[in-house]
Image 1 (tube, protein in one colour):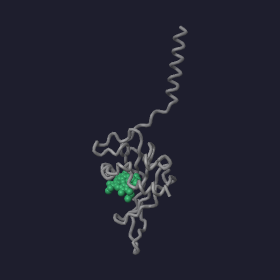
Image 2: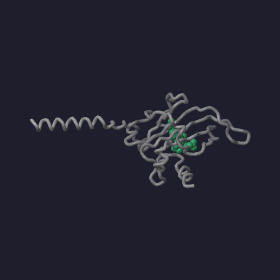
Image 3: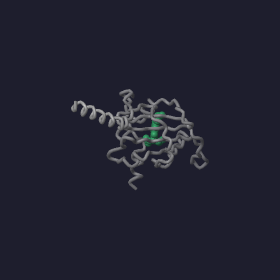
Image 4: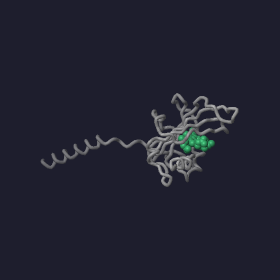
Length: 171
Ligand code: HEC
């Protein structure tokens, strides 16, 4: 009888522990990473990118995990997220760009086991992609296109402006 009591006490303790432990975060796929509410308070990844070729200004933020946990040698850690705002822009007479409306907000994030649902030929490590309109609704962009364009950047952890970022940080 004593043994049974001890065993059930142990079981109760074990299940209480299981309840206290937060469940593992689910592994996400494309379009499942929400637009982070607080990204404007994150560090700037780089100064705004002026894309005169496509008449856009792009403003890129990186979350504190990605900013403080990344190294040029090791790339970006699990938990990194990037947000890129895409503004339309009109050329000024002097060749600079005048910033127009915000059109889209692109999000890119990486964590353990993410992106398993992506086609094998378009796997970008464990990075996933989401795209939003300025009001936060999904923009409907095809994330296969994101993957196709970022795929050749595999040696740079799939991040386009990798070298520029680490060059800037080294200064
Ligand atoms: C035509 C190629 C192309 C496509 C398609 C593309 N990207 Fe990018 N992406 C780039 C380039 C190049 C940059 C660097 C900024 C620049 O030069 O405009 C970039 C930068 C980014 C960044 C900032 C971090 C970095 O890599 O420097 C994020 C976030 C991002 N893209 C997300 C997306 C998402 C989400 C999609 C799909 C909805 C997407 N991209 C589609 C080429 C592409």
